[in-house]
Image 1 (cartoon, helix red, strand yellow):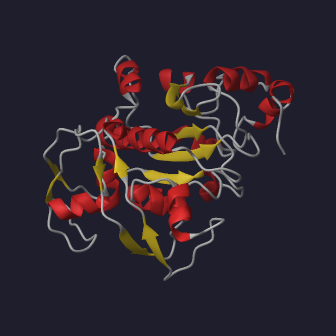
Image 2 (tube, helix red, strand yellow):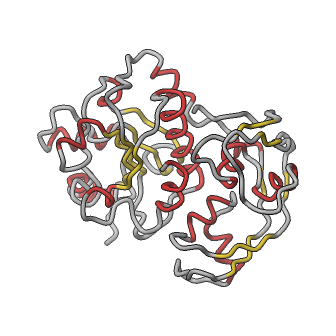
Image 3 (tube, helix red, strand yellow):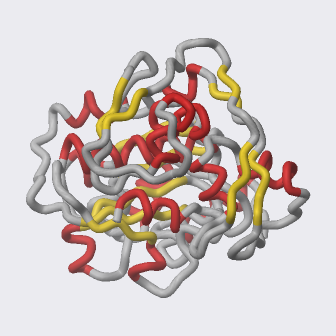
Length: 301
């Protein structure tokens, strides 16, 4: 169902309190020349965070496959030039893959991947061979989307021993930002306001990929983003604006999300954490079928 802005302001906010029912720092800049593989890294995600294509990363390191090992040093090709193009590649779908996750790993959009393979929906099957189109990588791909979060967090005494889980959500509606949801959640009787610790905008009521900090992160308070009180005590909630059952998160939203989680785990908490989608914890659809949950599990588990 599509909401008008008037209907949203009057009614839909009540659904945004927690998905369907409640509805580090970038590891290296574009000028970096090398990167040491860490536990949980994949070639695709290293390419993504450095703003280069996976195929150019393979070529720079004479890799014939995606296999990398912890401690391995990789040369990062220069991503400062206005445009770098990568050669076409083939990819064989593996168990747990999603179209969005494959696109994310290859630094292209889901729509590009669909067009290259004449796919109308999101259905893919294990063993299917996909053509991966040329990826156009610009300097903006390496943009630091978490600078504001880092600066504000410097003033916060983060309870690093408290947090052991990060939970991904979608808002399940396309409108909203931290301020709007905070007011709605307080009207619902949530005295600590916004249920999530971070909100990532979609370009409607806040910037596309803009990360907003909620009062629960500023004050290091338990979340209100899942039903379980015990999970809320130790889980950081990150909500991306949008209904990802119907649409896909934008590239900037995914860039912001991975930069934020990389920074939280690598520079702030400095420890292994549990990563989960909301539906991994409770029976629901959040963060939506079009959120690349399998790819994120591969990155952070």
